[in-house]
Length: 336
Image (cartoon, rainbow, N blue to C red; front, side):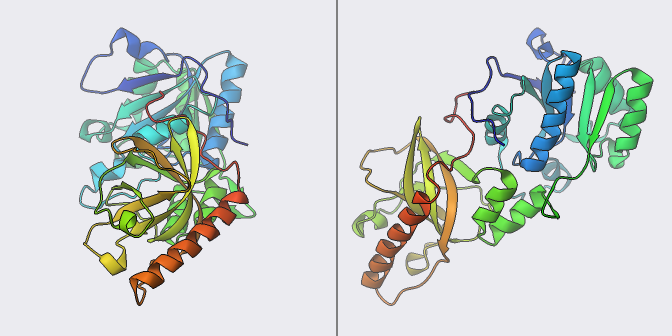
């Protein structure tokens, strides 16, 4: 169950960096129970870990936080391999703010942090830097240079240094393990509803509305265009979407891809909002993918394309009517 209430004030974001001394404000989450991990996508498996941390925090009457890492560790270890991120840093923080946590510790992941041994990670970060009261991790969490720190290692360290350690088993649904990799695989196949079932909410992207070639306007379907991260692995195609603009949620249909009939080599997300005529150029919006309608296609004529776009709109309206409240548990962009 997703907590859709506003973030509890104050939701504290603390940034840790091995290269600098901590400022007074950086100690706001000292002594907390921390759930450690990347938490990319904040899917249902991550929320199971967070739920254990929240329960332990209540038991110990301590604040509860997530300790996560930015940039994505793969970007440091394999910089030449683009990472299809389920949620960028801003989106991850917005999702975490709706889980009941008191805050998030964002550790800068760089060569210095990657070089820390498991012993030094425990001593320098968990004990000296954040004085943790408890640590909660998933069953497959590893840390420290060479991933030498295992859950068993962490349990032994907790006993030696006096902090609680909880290890959370794999989270499965009908025998299928939920993981960030499984969500990526679903999105790569265009299976946005399967991805939403694993995430616990519809997958979404955020971006500033940019000017396009005005082709949609000429065809009678003016679009709000977003340029997504080139590493975005969502299958190209047409989707029913729900869009967050400020505090409003609006329905629409979107094409993600190259538009094969007018291919300029640029991959765009083009969103046609139903019954909407406002100028939103430059605004940052959220686009949640509710249902896949079809792959990108080439049509024999522009008239045939326009007819199909009309059909796509009807199909999108029907899909969105079946999911009237589907939207990620986030506030507006910049609300944290």
